[in-house]
Length: 375
Ligand code: KG4
Ligand code: ZN
Image (cartoon, rainbow, N blue to C red; front, side):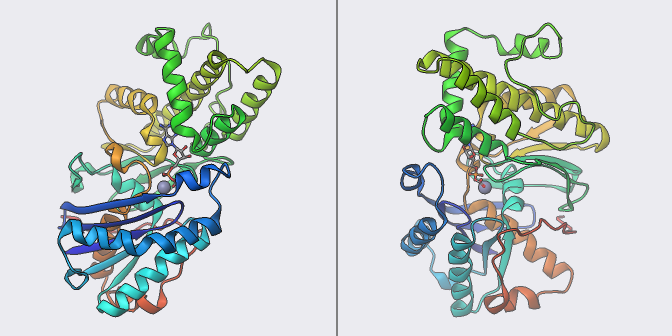
């Protein structure tokens, strides 16, 4: 089945084409046009500017994807689009474009939850081939992006159950705000992470050794580990960001060296909480596979520390290739495929056939569990 997908929930205009089969799929095109430079000027994403850019970009990006895949629109069997959560003016552009495509091509359309896409992104390899099997479930996913920080348990494919989430800022949002406090630029995640890496390199910090000492009370920690003493699987990063702000105000922050130290200590605090809570969640929600997803999954320290911790539990960690950590339409195509299978298996194919007129964009769309036989 050939699926063409659109993703416009935030500041990337993305179109992908995926040739999907039940548990083995191939990416034929993956085009992402990023608006990062435009929004950097404002220190964050401006929703109406994002929508204007999506309007400009959507047709060229769509044409480029079709050219790369050497296909025509009439070859496509199914259209998929992110219909939430996200910025409403941005989402509307993608949803309305997808509805027009579905109407004119008379092909079904499915709406995809953005986070369902991120969750599935961990099952792509470097060549952007996708593979998943029922034996990999139950699955525990840590989703960390600019808008979300959640632990999601899927006992079977794809019975998404949110077992913990942030009570305030998302992890990526905290990275972005710390970058703002330190005047580093936007988006902050990669910049903070780069400065933290400089600090590790310059101070020859042995991270393996550091991780072995993590729980020793003698280890000094500059910043708090929020919610770590709570028995639930929720997170909170807003206080940590404030701790960085107070520390920066109290100390002289003009030198690059002190900024690098703060970035390192801040990253340690975030990663420590994310990894510890994920491992704790495994005790209550036993899983065969753990996965990491979302924009912050590009963070090297998080990838390595979580991988080591998961391996210690005798499990495998699935992570998206670096090309798919941020927003993209490949993950939306595959999530769209499984959504279509869900409709098919539950005799509801009327819904995707009528979505050209019925599909709505929803800024606060809830992640719903689906029950799908994938083999
Ligand atoms: O998934 P994503 O592209 O968009 C949303 O759905 O929100 O995530 C973007 C977030 C931003 O907050 C960005 O700063 C963060 O991911 N990010 C990172 C890194 N790369 C991107 N955070 C920490 N370390 C990174 N290397
Ligand atoms: Zn995202």
